[in-house]
Length: 457
Ligand code: ATP
Image (cartoon, rainbow, N blue to C red; front, side, top):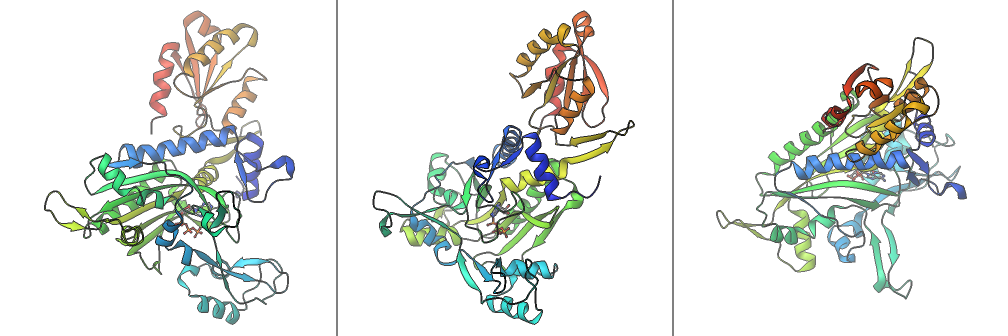
């Protein structure tokens, strides 16, 4: 297959119903995307896999579902009101806007723009005459800090300062502010974790690269509350736990790497990203951070509520440390789509498009195909109805069997079940595997177990 481009993925997603441009019939709203029937199944299956690993199988972990709108003081306590901004720089020549850290990174791929101060960024851009990606000139304004939080107003008096609220820029604060609620109601003992999946909003300067950077996105975050001294052990554990999750989802290990942060945020003791090799280059997919006791200490300071935990074993009192594991759900879906897309030239010269999804996250698990509509339709529909009680199935009766296989492969359905005369006579079906194209014959009442065994995560 030729090198995969982002345009190709965007087109495949649109063609097969994974992701559409937002508000398309109105000409679209830039950098907004709507998940179609297949994309939303894929996304939900990825969320379920995350939930299974980070909540269900993870000892002492609990899920919450906090509101997007939170008390504005939360964002003062978290530091977002004062410092959640990106370094904005304008090209004086063509008037395009850029993130200064990303300009520098683009210019020299070995640099981590995050590790530069504002002054260092300006100096680097001047010294190296870094060109504008749009017009090629190197004539920039000074850097200004651009606040990333979306503001909105509640209540009837618009523009009143009292009604100012923010759309959350991360889900993490929903876990921190519910620390005591979860601890008390679950009778949880430190170390324990709180996770959630939910929407976040950032007024990004340079959204783009399809769903990689958008202004509205979903995060899957897990915060582990632990005692100081055990934090580094848990930090290492969650770094590996995240990587193993990605490998188990089936992502190509050559396209995954760790990248330690050189410059740490003021509250962080250790931080590391997992990057994926997207079609436009390496990009952050997942962050693991040792956030120390910063979050709960700040909420103690701003709310006036004690965040001190008393250890029931030795009566020691302390504010727990937090190890955060944070991944963007949309970036994960994008990584999975890029990683799974494949083209194969068949013996007859046809191109077979395949989404090689791990069966556990494939939107549909099986396509039911009557060999001859006239004779096999009724049984095929009965079977679809029966199997749909266990997993998502689709039904396809139009076109040659070969064409139907191709359609099923292109949307990543791992199994095709064909109903033919043998089904009528012997109660057997053939099941074709998407990747190997091999077929097995099994009894109708064995299908459910056969597929259920193959779609476990
Ligand atoms: P970046 O450096 O790419 O702006 P970040 O370091 O600000 O990301 P975090 O605040 O650590 O990101 O957010 C955790 C995760 O949320 C990221 O690893 C990424 O997967 C996802 N994410 C962050 N910003 C966006 C966005 N604008 N669009 C889509 N996903 C995002």
